[in-house]
Image (tube, rainbow, N blue to C red; front, top):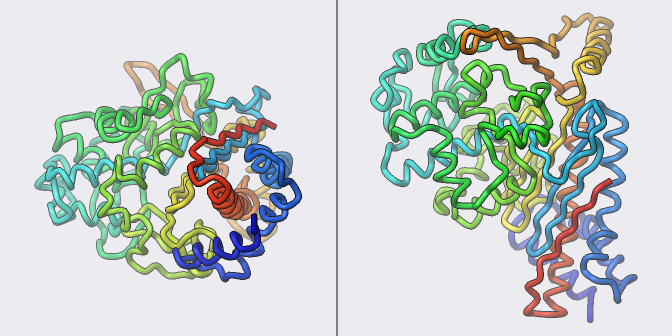
Length: 459
């Protein structure tokens, strides 16, 4: 078999599909798979996959032992090849990371809300042009705000105080319903729009958000480990939140309205998140004609403002020629790729030839460790003349006449994305390329090869 010819044809195909990486960068990233194949001509596909993921596992372990990240699950689906790498611990108690760990995915929840909304638009329940006040009269202060304004994240909202400061669910909901629109027409990433969208969708359909999630996503994909309300039997599998023992997430706004909303609250396994991406691409859960809204840049954002290049959908990151300097999509990924990311250090990358997940759990490091990390950060800030940050908080809510307390660990600075997420994003992009090439070699060897290659690697 002429592996070099297959390799050159593969590079041609990747370039034809579209990527911001040069041919030299693509070749450099992929050549290790070629070398492994040439050196192990009698190896099984499973053995070849295991050989190429060793670097991934090594980095994940080094990262876990350097930063306050108890454990991880990283998944990749490339053609017939499924890889899941998981290791470390569920939390500070040193419980081993479970193969079926459920992660608090924070703002990745917004992607689920968008999927439901796009389905309702296709079914004629409402349109991009419909005004929110005409769909849901409870929102009294939003003026001529439209569904399109909300879904594209081009609206700045203002509430009368923080939702997390409200004691009861009804108080928090009233605060949400009476929020004001400050401005529209300029990109503004926030949680309030998707919280509003969840309420509007419930009002228009007469169905709960949980029912809509089931009808448009989980039932269609036969997902068994995607939850808004966590069954008591699965609480032990929840990680990525200091409130795991209660089955609750790390987001105070979601907690203020009962535990979840349209912006946060979903708990999911890596396998189910991979299935979500696959269902998106196949059109099973998302209209194919609208998929471009996820990977096509929307309103231009000042590139000096950090990670930008958001999609038309508003909550997705899209490809950019500057790669991770501008966005969370690596240059090696196809241009038609997008990312949805959560503050709990969680992410799904969806591309035409590969889907990958990154699920870290720094918000399960434990409160005492989190306070130590907060103190280190604030000491460094003090030396620079900067104000201290409050990264560890406690919230008290009234539920059925009882006071309940939840905690927040904002671990984004404790586990900086440049040292944790970004290297994994790049490694996933490189490994996905390598596995795509392996798939091409396998197909050349056996044109009818249909076997699923499943590698679960537990460290």
